[in-house]
Image (cartoon, rainbow, N blue to C red):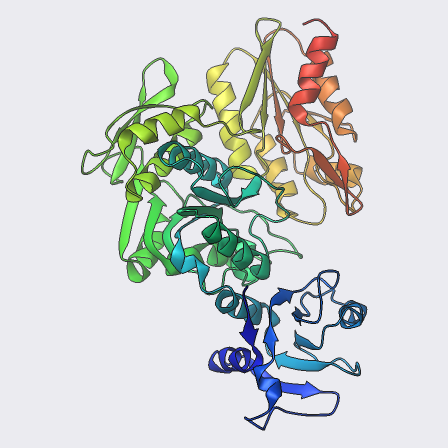
Length: 507
């Protein structure tokens, strides 16, 4: 069982300059060192009032935190809470800090016994490709050492290398994150591979973590809006904080701002490795195998992982992700044969899923949900099917990533064909309004239709497909839900809609 005393919490917060005061309803300020109160032990940390008892230290986090949550926790037995403000509630003691989000991970890391020091930590960030790269690495490591790799990803979480649970955030809240790492260690995991979002750094969810390997895939405008990052500069700044806390850094030499990234990584990390498509710009590079869209050759500086590799999902951007995964795995001392087999076996649901119908018609379903990922998908399908007309089905989420609406509109202006704008997790916003915002930025020859219901939009695209047409359905991937009014409504998924349509129509 994990535990931590008030005395130790007081020391941690004081050492980090976060502790302001400790106040009870009797104005007792912990001035007497011999006080039994200083030896009070907590065996649980929580920010959820529904998950509390007498042994819980409760954290009052979030801009929308309400006193009613704390009152509910106190009714369940909570006596001590950490907060940035004092709440006038009899029978409670407040540990007042200057920054609750910094206090949470620092206390949690020690509470769980510094679990990140007991497992190989791999952190992956970037605007696109985090999930794909994470699952490539997982497949490789699982091939080499079955059921010894934990994963924390947008697509799901496994702490025993076998059983998966749904992820609520790309990078969990700090109390949850350190608890997960500790559980992975307890389960005997050797590696933990996780996606690290820009919000994770902005909200201090990963404060105190140090990664054995940190990966920076790429950067382009995304998550810019009032509820996320106010500017591109803020987004980029948060992303590249991973470079400051990684022993080995792996960089994509084709990323924007590569020289800046390399300079920063070289300053903070012990080793910097680069990858790309040319030996002139990267330590590791790949070259396509002619007439084999899913095969490529890797060239490495020490020749250890040189050879031919195959991946199941198409696209040059996925070959980049696979190369990166191969480098990560090699740094973890995985042999080439396991890397080859792991990449060959890797399947990432919702990423470049493909079905052909009517002989010359093709449908691609991909999670692409920002400018850079959508452009990569569209450029690939045009290259693969140059004679086909293009139809795109997509939307943008409500309440976040507001900048994507303009980005999508400007990107779509570069293509010829049709676009059907539809719902994509509208949440509390009107999906029609979101679609209209995207539409107002489309200036090119693309014809635009708006169908609010996503299933109807996909079926309309299929029903109205001419011969020689490629349909790209972007944004949701394999999601089995759609956010509407803060509720996860069940959703069959993009590809099942396509498959059901083809089956019903005997195509």
